[in-house]
Image: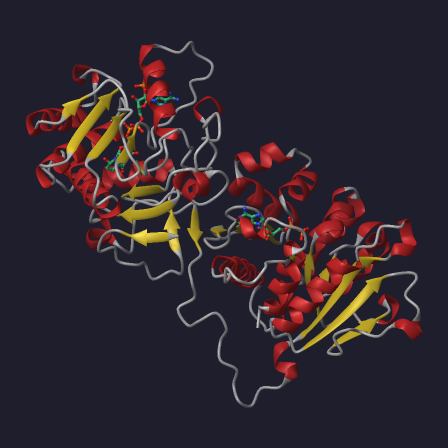
Length: 522
Ligand SMILES: NC(=O)C1=CN([C@@H]2O[C@H](COP(=O)(O)OP(=O)(O)OC[C@H]3O[C@@H](n4cnc5c(N)ncnc54)[C@H](OP(=O)(O)O)[C@@H]3O)[C@@H](O)[C@H]2O)[C@@H](O)CC1
Ligand SMILES: Nc1ncnc2c1ncn2[C@@H]1O[C@H](COP(=O)(O)OP(=O)(O)O)[C@@H](O)[C@H]1O
């Protein structure tokens, strides 16, 4: 989902660093000081022009919507470059602001576009076709919330052009970030969000991030808004790869270089890969709402993901001993009261319903490694004493991984889902801080945060996962990876990546469901 459009040097740390707007500005200032005036915008414009030619090689018309700031400047510069590189194509430019009111760099690029002979148009021509290209250079990281002031002429004009970009039936290339999207959070400003789903299929979208990558490209509404993300660091890493002028706000997880599963030493045995105990699955006998399937899914996943031994403790009051036959003989069934919680990695809460609560004090106190999911999280959000037990685990060197979806996260943080989604990095970090554990906030662009470390955004996964039971699979997978002996943070990052990667590589001829996903984990 991320492609590199330049000779960018990877940093020695794992994953790709993601910089928020403030950090990007510091890096830009640091870098711009070393370069002749106007160099960065010229490089940006050339990078946009080159990518435009690569993604729309047969475009006869390229329409560029240029905003009032330097993002617009990148658009003018790209227009000038495209006119020189593709003299036979029509390069059509619409602007928001007259050149005399543009920032100095953008004005210089406007003059270059004018000299190159681009064609100025009032709006997106109606005759643009599927092979043509629309370039969105309206707003980048300079986006501000202007909802409290009365819109002026520039703002109305910008909105008019933005709506044409968002409804475009031809491919769209966004410069730096999709206009209207907050680069730090991946949330649209409400008044700049696409208002209606286009009648036709959404056109392909590409985004060329410039200089740095931003968190908002990869989480919340960012994935849909930005589509395929490309990155050109404008030469920064060649100049200064190891000590950027600002710290990243997050890191983007990437495909492990050594393959998804490490080789198993010949002398290893089942004890080398740890025990995973699943505790959950309220039975029909409790309230007439069976959720045992969720616990089975987690157990099945742990089994296929390679845990040494898997035990399943169902919260099923009706579960008579003579019926306790596992459809997967490798999965050992347990009565919760018979289970020793002191040594295994425990995955607790999947389908736990109301029956999970009485077991939480025991596992919170005893389990050395504890993945808390679903109803275990809901119970903790409603009980100060359980929350206290969870917080105190860190002082006993017991770690925990919380795997909430946004609503469960909102309950834990005593807020609403909208606020969680408005800043997913902040929400995950707040959970990690509040409960002194690793928090894995699920959804598009899963975020993994641990106290005192830079959070991660998971780069894999897609909406194939948006169906019941896939979260239970993730919980079981997290437990299985953690049981092999890595840290909580590593387990959460690796599990989220592998879970999403499977969905990304899902063969079209195999119907997708959570249980089939679980069985493909091997
Ligand atoms: N930084 C870098 O490293 C590099 C940066 N580069 C490029 O520069 C871009 C950043 O440029 P930037 O700082 O000029 O901001 P930008 O995104 O053009 O927006 C500012 C303009 O938008 C307006 N405006 C804002 N909000 C609005 C709203 N809600 N509704 C309507 N209007 C709104 C705001 O209006 P004003 O406040 O002036 O009225 C102002 O005119 C960056 O994304 C990248 O493309 C590359 O060239 C090289 C490396
Ligand atoms: N649009 C999406 N893009 C990427 N991942 C998604 C998307 N929708 C759901 N997922 C993933 O699917 C899983 C769903 O988990 P959850 O909501 O807990 O489901 P359940 O409780 O039914 O198992 C999570 O890992 C989540 O990150």
